Image (cartoon, helix red, strand yellow):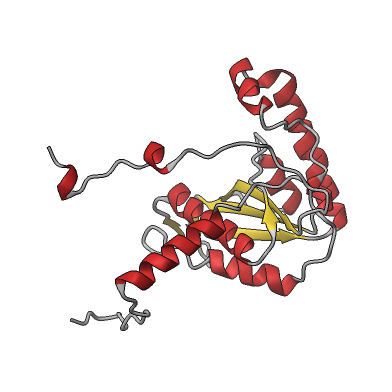
Length: 227
């Protein structure tokens, strides 16, 4: 069956055993992924970053509007500005803005208001969501499922970073409006996520935490489970 404006979809056809092997391998590889706060300042080329962002741009989106902008920052002056502004917000968060229960939950991770990784990591990728589709001639159109679409794109970006052998951290200082101001983004773009990207520092550590097991996160609805 064909449709106007459609093209054939090409994909490798694997048998069930090959699919299972791939699924197992993917899990084993991804179970090693961790959020990292200790980066090396070792250089990462712009070409690498471009490929990572291009991968994120393959994400599905509402009506294919692709409502995202990825700002890649390596300029030391801008990174310093971003760190200073982020730490100002984080200090307010940790010193009174956050409820005690939130701080208790964060205690096991060991985070605080200081964010040196924002300068140490060779790149910062700041993801903006486009709340409206503003075209070159000034025409404004509606975007659909913006947060969902941008969230999926960020997931692909994190995956691409891990697959490339690099590390990252999902950083969300609140509020984040300073990112749009520092980078001079238009009003219809709102900051969504900040990702430092680089190699892991040789002496890096991560919190000793456990992920929920499969039975805790999966509810199975199959013929054998029907009552």
